[in-house]
Length: 477
Image 1 (cartoon, one colour):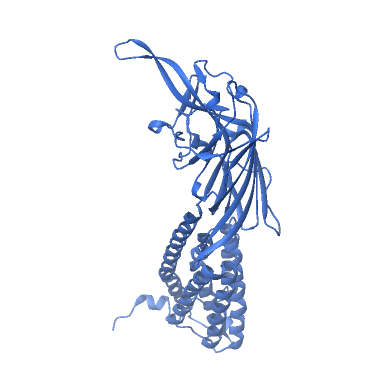
Image 2 (tube, one colour):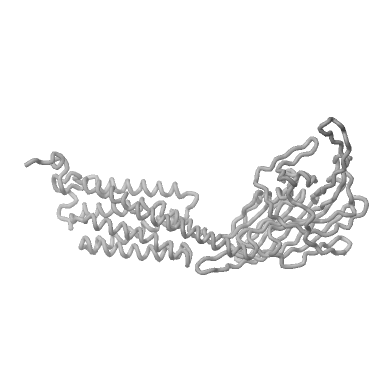
C-alpha cells in the first residue's frame, strides 16, 4: 500500500499543520466580513439619501453672500467687422463693487430632525451683516469708457435657497432710513454664455473651483445720487438650512463669527480660522478674518465676464455631524476585522498548545462567525444609539459569548476566565484603534506587532511537528 511521503514530515497531530489550517480559516472569514462591509456601505448610502431629503425640505446647505453694490453702466466700444470696418457700439452691463469692510455675525440654533432611525442636523440661522462701501476707491483705474448710472445702483445679497428665508430682510442706512430687499430677476450671477474666466484689459483670472449656478439674489436701492458716495448698511437675515452653513467672503476685508448651541461641529470652508473652534457647555464659537490679499478677488468686477458665484467657493463654514458619519467607525472596525479574527484564532491555538486539548476546525469557524456577527450588532445598534454605546453593548455580548465558549470547549473555567479577560483587553484595544482616526494605522501596526511578538515568545518551546511531547503540555490540563 502506497504511503504519503509528506505524512512522515508533518505528523497528523502537529501544531504546525494546524497553524496552516487556521491561517486558511482566517482568510475564509474574510468572506462574511466583505458581506458586512457591503452592508455598511448600503446603510450609509441610505442614510445619506434620507439626510439629503430631510435637509432639502429645510433649505439644504446654505451659503450666504453679504451686501455688495451693483451699478449698471453703458460703455461705448469700437468693434471691427468682417470687412475691416470700424464701428462704435454701445454696451450695457453691470459692475459689482465689493464693500471695503464687511462683517457677519451668525447665531445657529440646531436641532435633529428624524425619519425613522435616520436624522439630519437642521438649523435656524440669524445673521447680522454690516458693510462699508467706498465705491470711488474701488473703481480707481477702471477704463474711462465706463459710464455708471449711480441713481440705479442697488445693494445685492444672495443665498443658496431663498425659500428658507424666515424674515423680510431690510437694509438700514447710516441716516436711519430703510429699504426692503426684494428678489431680482434682471441680474444673472453667471455670465452669459457660460464664461468661466474673468478678463479685462491687463487682467485675467480663471477660477479653480466649479462655479455654482443655483444662487438666488435679492436687492434694494442703494440711495446714491449722481456721484459714488461712501456709505454703510446693516441688515439681519434669518433663514433655515441643514448640515452645513457658510458665509462667503463678500467684502474686500471680511470678518465672520459663527456660534451655535451644538458641540458636534467642525470648521470647514476655503479659509482657515487663525484660532481653533471653541466648544463650551453651551455650544461652539469660531471666528475668521479674510483680508483683500487673501480673498483672491478684485475690489470691483464687470459681471459680463466675472462670475459672482465664484466667491461662494471662498467661504467660511461649519458643518454638523451628519447621519452617515456614524458609519465611519463601523467601517473602520470592519477594515481591521481580519486582524482581530486572526488574533483570536491564534490565541485559541495557544490555549490548545498549553492545555493539551484540541479544538475542532468547526469550532474555529463558529468563533469567527461570532466575531462577524459582532460587526452586525455594532452596525445595527450604532444607527440607533451611537457608536460608543453600541460598541460597548456589542463587545460585551461577544466577549461574554466567546469567553463562555472557550471555557466550555476546553472544559476549564480557568481558560474561560483567561479568554474573557484577554478578549476584553482585545476589544478595548479595538475601540481605541477605531477612535484614533488619524493614528489608526500606527495603532493597528503596534497592536499587530505586540500580538505577534507575544505569540512567538509564548510558543518558542512548542514542538510544531508534533513528533514528541511539548514541554508545555506535560502535566498541564
